[in-house]
Image (cartoon, rainbow, N blue to C red):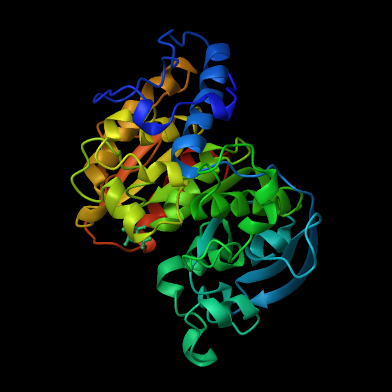
Length: 408
Ligand code: GTR
């Protein structure tokens, strides 16, 4: 089901289809009727998303890791494992990832492995907790809005709630997105230029920043999975806003990721492009021209020509669990069209024999997230604007408790 990318039509030559493309129908109109068919349709959707939305990314390079372990972090609640992830095929001065993994101390003491929440951060790993053991990287000093150490350490503590996550029996892993791409608007910055020659598509389909971040998250998965302290099948990828878009793309295109949790991811994330009266294709590609493949901007004013929409991206997660979280007052991310997307993706879970939506969605506020209330798909809202907090993290972890054996 891989078409030569040069054989795919330019956006203006794609047929207009105002209704959502059916994830269970091939481009040629034939139906997807079996798991084997879905493998082919999945590959087709993946390629269409690459070609017309996010751009083609390179394959997985060999990684080189160097790890440092510090027990007794966060007042004794955590062991910190910092891993430098470099790419064997790139020169030594090329971008590298500094991944901070916080493990619950009691699990480490008992020799127990844990599920891990993995997310991109904006300001640097040291902003996630106030403990001085966390390295302040050069990237953070250069790109994290760094001002002074005392104010910066733990500046995002109420956002990530790391100690709370650990108290629930989960590890927390994070790296700053600027390690891979600083989001400066200059395509010459970050990792992308190093792989220019390896991308399979025609001009205009090269990976954008979101695809680069997603690829970087997948390299973190490469590094985390072999770690004894990490349950390799129970890595959750979570991200907020632009990082939520990257998290969804990473989780959708990497079946090693055990659970996918885009948060307030909006356009380019879970929110559909069709009938989206909030952030449109023209808005997002105008403000952030580097985030997507160049082809995507051509759909401004003609989203009906997109052969995929965000429900197709969500469907690639199936049959794995997906929780989409949204702020009821976060209008720009269009929670309504995100909910429509997960609903429209559900038939893929059904086809694969997994329960999709169990109860009525959305779940809201203190609604219980438990075996009886959720299947493999959840859409959950809180009464907030654009932010991440403990309430959302608890929803994700409650959902993970349902799907992972004996977490917590
Ligand atoms: C907004 C953008 C959104 C979202 C957000 C963010 O300005 O329009 O798509 O990505 O930024 O990442 O903060």
